[in-house]
Length: 415
Image 1 (spheres, helix red, strand yellow):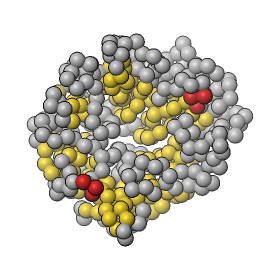
Image 2 (cartoon, one colour):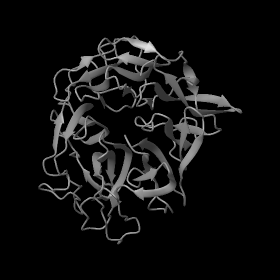
Image 3 (cartoon, helix red, strand yellow):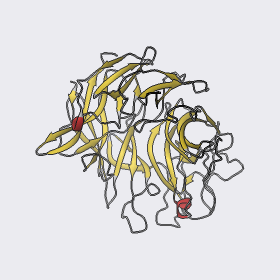
Image 4 (cartoon, helix red, strand yellow):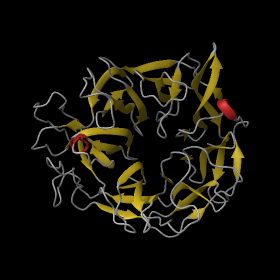
């Protein structure tokens, strides 16, 4: 039944995509203590059955570690999520550079394995990382996991830039245990974007790559921060094309050196899609969101302001060209969004409601009554189930004198 699914006296948050099990019966989420969800202090990964309300704990962290941001494999009962450091020390607390991806099977709760290996001592191991990974999402074919990456070695040198990386499934990486935070991984991880500390104004160079999303199993869209000719930072949309073999190094080592960051594999191609510096409101804007590709890979949806300053939904071809404005609302799109399996509709929060937006006509249909203020649906996630019948989202509720974020679902009326 649609409506509130979880009713616990603690807060729940959804990841921006892939929160549904392949059979559309379970929603996976993390548990956090604060009302606004900004504090990463959860110790459990849970899932709830939308038909029965049954809650299962897939993983409970130990030894001072925090965990969160879970997503499902597209066809298997696997969940990947962030795990912070166990036994944290003053020099190794949870941070962007000190976290990893781990995988748990739904039928084997509490049994995890490391996704990305870590090697912090030079010479570094190809296929291992030297820092922290974040927001792990399987490719459509399940062959890869993409994530954002922050490098500990570069951070210690005062020049870290966030990048996008992928892990290739089934190619185990073993590292020397020469550092207490080194560990092996089941997948071969490589950084696939190129950033620079000081981009050339007016160029396609970027100082930060983030909010990655799969177009298909060989292409990833992401946001990149560039400098305009006037020296202002503007966020633009980029695509990176993966080579056939991500394990082959180019001119620079995959694992980096003591002074240089990890480098993309041979044949990786990074290209820019949007050029918005001359618009009245330049740059990709609006709530934090991830560009999302239609299932046929022909359109990438993203958010950008119109000339009136309203956050609207736009699409662009992954081959480039002019962006097309989809919505023309007199209110903002206020959330991350996802495509419906029909390839036409997108689900998003706007004007206090969960809405389905037709990407051809721009028409929007409310799935929930409008709620404004403190108890309005939250903007982190609005995720359509694989069968197309429901949208999962988060909404605060007041209970026992406190406010908690809870999981809700809305019916789409489509299948």
